[in-house]
Image 1 (spheres, rainbow, N blue to C red):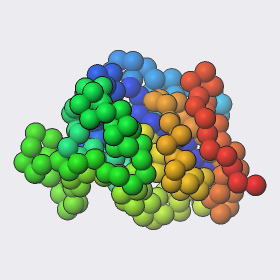
Image 2: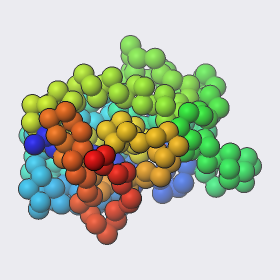
Image 3: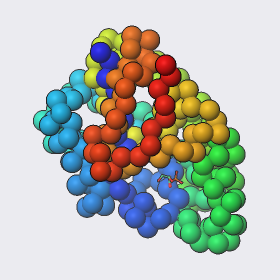
Image 4: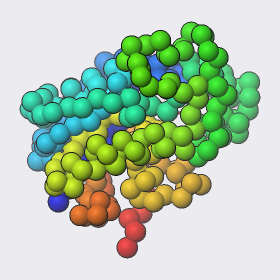
Length: 238
Ligand SMILES: O=C(O)[C@@H](CO)OP(=O)(O)O
């Protein structure tokens, strides 16, 4: 049975500092490294051993992938990195403190920027501190100035369809080590979550989400491996 393991990176330095992160390449904290290792141990304990892995081009996801695979003794499997699995681009909010931003703009406005489906944050100014358009890892890609979840899904989905789905259709166990919002986009697609319901999906850091799929890649079961840190999951269509 095709098995998908979604793993959000472990706690990052800016998760800890409560700053809007997006495409900024912050690293894991010591706690985040431990979460990633624990995620790998849980996979091994439950016999969920990935055949292949996909991750973004951001350090916190790459290191989470490596730490989890090391802990599961699967660091030899093929790992493919692609920017399409990056976190949602946070535009002009990048780097700002989330609480301070809510104080300035109001809780409601910040909730819309963080969790609405199709309202992107204000764009990042070209040439500003967090402008990554000159970063060599994005050579050939168009670096967005901001992204809503909808825009994130629109760049994740073609990659899902062309690169990840074929491996699942070949009946593989596939690990995707990525980010809160790129994984939320995959969950939205797989579970057909309505635009106004996706706000309720919050994937915890470093907790493997195992989704068993049928031959048409529709979910037949879903569960977090660390039950103590689990969050609500969308319903599976009958
Ligand atoms: O800052 C970010 O890039 C994301 C993920 O940590 O935050 P949010 O919870 O607002 O999606």
